[in-house]
Length: 353
Image (cartoon, rainbow, N blue to C red; front, side, top):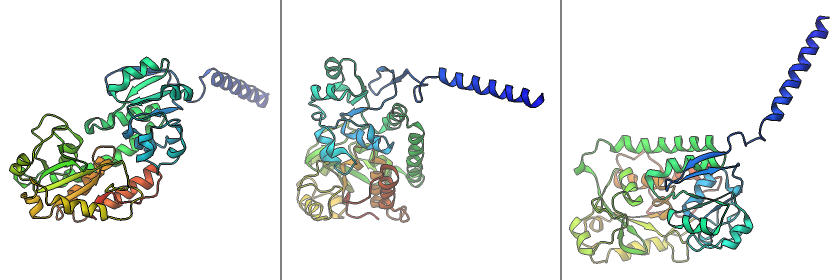
C-alpha cells in the first residue's frame, strides 16, 4: 500500500509540473514585452525576443559581435563592409545602404526586429518603416558606452556576457587610473589630437578624443573648447605647444590608409608622420622637437575599443609608469577572446609594446 501511494503521489507531481510548464510562455519569451530607454531618451517597448537586427551605426557592429550575437545581423551598411570585412559574415550579408542613406525597400524585405541608428535618423526611419522598432544606440559617446552595451545585451539575450565584458574592461581602466590618478596637472603630458585625414579638426570637451587622452592620464589641449569637433588654426596649436600629438587614423581602410586589419606594412604610417613634421603650426612644438608623434586607428579612439587606445597612449606618454604594460597583448585578447577573431594587422604606430 505504501509503495502504491508513493507511486500515485509521484505521478500527480509529474502531471502538475508538466501542466505548469505548458502554461508558461515559450522559452526566451518570459520577460516580454519589455521596455527600454534608448540613447535619445526614447521609451520603446520590445514585444518579442530580438532575433533579426539591422545595425545602421558603424560603431555598433563590434559591440554586437562582442556579445556573440553577430548571427542576428540580417542586413549591413556598405560602410560596415569596408570597415569590418574581417568580422564573420559581414561581407556576404545583404546591403541596406549607408549609415545615413538607407534602402527602405531592402530593410522592409529583411523584416528585422530592431534597427540600430543615431538620433538624427530615427524620425525618418520610423516614418518609412512602420512596425519595425527603431532604437538609438550611438556607441560613439564614451560616457554612454556601458549603458548602451547593457541595453544591447538585454535585447539580444546576452546580458550575462555583457556584464562579463564590462567587468574585464573596467579592470583595464582601473589599472590605468591607479597609475595616473595622483599625477599633478603639471605632470601630465599635454596632447593635441586630430583626424589623420582632417587636419586641424580636433576633439573638444566630452569628445571621444578627449576621453582617450584623459583615460591615458594626459591633458587635452582642446579640453576648454566646448564644441565636440572644433576646428583650430596652426597658430593656436603652436601657442598651446603640445608635448605629444596623436592622430586618429581613418577607418575606411583603402590603399592609402595608415592602419587596418589586413595591413602588414607600416610604410604609410611612417611616411605620414615624416610629412607631419613639416606642417606649419606643428613643426615648432615640443611634440615635433622630441619626436612624440603617434597614430591610433580610429576604432581605438572613436568607438568601443577606445579604452584600448588609452592603453597604447599611456604607454607612449609614460613609459616608466607603464613599463610592465603590454597593450598589444590586451588588444589580442580583445580580438580572440571577445570577438572570436584572430588578431592581426597594423593598429598603431609606432609600436607601443
